[in-house]
Length: 403
Ligand SMILES: *Cc1c(COP(=O)(O)O)cnc(C)c1O
Image (cartoon, rainbow, N blue to C red; front, side, top):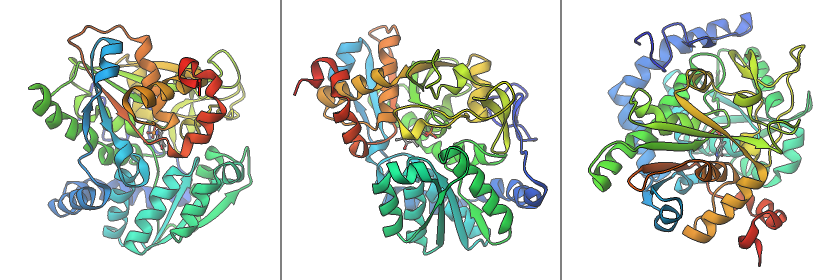
């Protein structure tokens, strides 16, 4: 990669961020993966198999939809990239289907994964059922209790779910536990990481798997507007995978502005936030150097947001670097703004978005548009899983909450 690229360099870094800070016992595993991943991903055999599964099983390409009423309201041409219409209801399966194919090519027989809200766990358990592979999911005990339906889905799909009782018993602890399991079974186990995080090469693997999103945006925009690039891309950002996929083919194209929405929770000036880019400082989390929400003495702070999928005290190293270099503009969206935006999209376009995706929708009100601006916003997932959250917070939805 060229020197000032926003993509990973040959040592696994994005500027000062990234790398592979792993325990000695995992060194060989991670090194093997570093050596194996590009030849696999770039082989014609992998590409054709992967694209066939994306088409026949996931349901791709996902539509690019001109949201007419929302366009009028915000004064731009707003297109929605409908990742909510994928099998299992979000973008996550683009990645799990790719990684499990990779695991098979590497001769691994056992799959492990971490999950927070359970969405990545379900997407992993789904592809394990599909490929008839053993599947073990690590999930914080707190999350097991608050995301019970997803736990039952994973079990129904044949996965073993391990409630993790260390730390805050949430996503961050589940990641640590998955890494610990990997240390105990380095030879037969493939760890399917759920976002653009973890030691190199995971952030790059996940970004490449999700890059199908912007690959499609290119030809879909060409078809619809006669131009293969938008003026702006908008996505929500937890670990950063749907955002990475949305921007992948436009990262070095300065005609395209990038706006990312992270979860502010109650606000960036409170202790109840998950806005890592606003509030984080440099540190090492789950095998990578990145921005981390931590105390002065380096203890990881618990992230707080209404959205379980954005509830992570770190951020993918690619995004830490892009934000630092001002390639992306990162907005911190509060719980209340997200709730309102979720109701707005529901009422104006008939699309109930995941509460994560509603953070991206809420970013629109903070941006000044020209009527000619072509904006593509990724709806990362559907909101069926969040109906209860929306209803419990309908008092925050203004005129849309009067029912
Ligand atoms: C998991 C999830 C996210 C956040 O993860 P990223 O890796 O940042 O994309 C966003 N939206 C939905 C619907 C999710 O399930």
